[in-house]
Length: 323
Image (tube, rainbow, N blue to C red; front, side, top):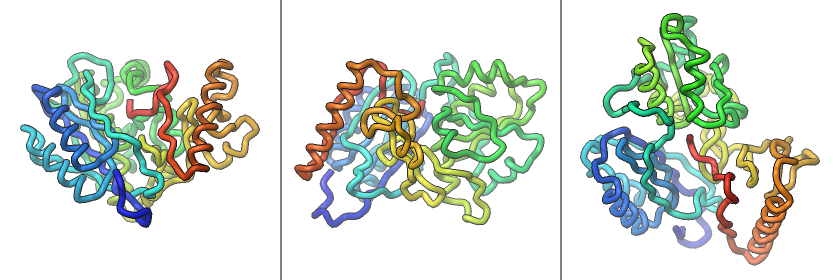
């Protein structure tokens, strides 16, 4: 994706998802890949029988053109998307990836079908009412490293390493006969929507989830009414956004993929591109040597005025995705 001249200061970032049956995801993958390449978009599109999940960046008119193509898929005609902006020199994503997966967000529980039944969608404007209701159990369905940099005060945090761990946490910490009203939230809405389907299948009677997630809440709710505390982790090169949806202060550790604060970057265990206080001492010498060499290549590319896209992660160290 080339932005004319290097004078462009920002790019548009588009996120969307929809749980709706796709009968031929591989055929749809080929169509969307061709459209995304023609529109010069970058980012990730995940497809599966249960629907679509995507974050893309590019020119606004190109993103809208791509969305029109998605909306022509049966069941996606009224698809909506969230837009934000990022610094052009960040680029947000380096490439376009369109992939078919068994689940577009991995819960790991058979039989959960959000296209058939989910909890009650709650608008950003009404979300504060649930936060204030003492009879409602509010749950942050995100992973621990996301919760650590920001959340809604008072929300339960399952302390999960991945979304796959959420069902077991529910089984050990919640009781359908005692916890009668549940409200959940996540970054963009997809995890809490799928979690709401799981909760209903598990016997919980009244389940709510924040429509559009934290990002829509931050976009919609006036600053004086905004209850969000901290920053919000996002799954792209921005790492985090602040309550005004501007780029946040966090960077990301290349080794463990966790967000790293300004204070942590001053810690003796922080080595840019190699390790951070969260993961120092957990890698082999071979892994550290690979991280160090990658960092060296990044610096050399910067000195040449180029961008180093990087190499594949070592086995077991994946780029953060909303799972």
